[in-house]
Amino acid sequence: MTPRRRPAHPLRAGLALAIALGAAQPLSAQQPAPAAPPAAAPTPATPPGDTVVARVDGEPITLADLSAAARELPDELRAAPPQVLYPLLLDQVIAGRAVTAAARRAGLDRDEAVRARIRRAEEQELQQAWLTAEIASRVTDAAIRARYDQQVANRPAEEEVHARHILVPTESEARTALAEIRGGADFTAVAQRMSTGPGSREGGDLGFFRRGDMVPEFAEAAFALQPGQVSEPVRSPFGWHIIKVEERRRAAPPSFDDAATQIRQQLLEAEVQAAVTRARDAARVERFNLDGSTPRPTDAAEPPAPAAPAARPGGPIRR
Image 1 (tube, helix red, strand yellow):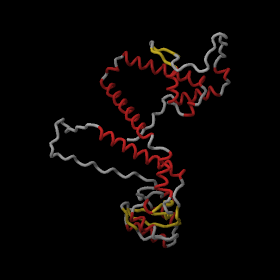
Image 2: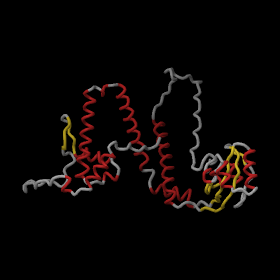
Image 3: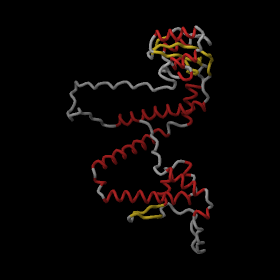
Image 4: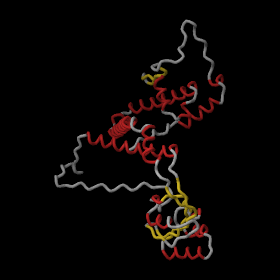
């Protein structure tokens, strides 16, 4: 489980349009100038958060409620002037409270299906809040830098090749393609016409890759070639390949800035998994058969299926 994004605000488009229209007008056109307050009772510059700005069926809506709603908006909307943003938010909060009140009057708050969805939503919010609190102090800039220094910074330069390939289902088709190339046909043109693999429209271009990026059969053949050389037919789990190497180079490790995002994601995933494990270990768990009966001591749980490896860019021949 991973921290999830909050859903997009359902009124984002409307707010954006209203804010854009409001920003295009001078302030005097957006609202009438307020009358000057009496000198003896000046209005505070920032009203307290518990200031009541509306009521719906007697239930108050406060300035703090509007501030909370504003925090749910994306940055570009949250930065709008309060005199534009808050009246719009107030309209939406009023509408939301009115709909909620209507649902309660209809008795939907007592409907078991609705209550079950509310419980699931509450559980998800609690899970998210707990996981966020657990990992906040662990996935820091210092932790990311330490992981980079440990695993990436001192890694030796690694050899890469830039190759093209033609992927076909059978050896006979691979040999037909190879015969055309050895007869003078352009590799790129043959790949565009015959290949079923990734990058076929670009003439089978796979770009630069490291040995570990590809399945072993393909990598062994590709890294045995020099620039300009073309392989014999190579069989892999995905079919038959003809490979042409365009360039070879030694690539230095990525810079911290280039690697930081990926390292942060790796740390997040590891810390979330560790937090879930800690939570499970601390809980008293009892498991039963699907009919509710108690499992016999001899019943062995079927081991879970291994997770499929994550897809990597570049197509099926990559690991």
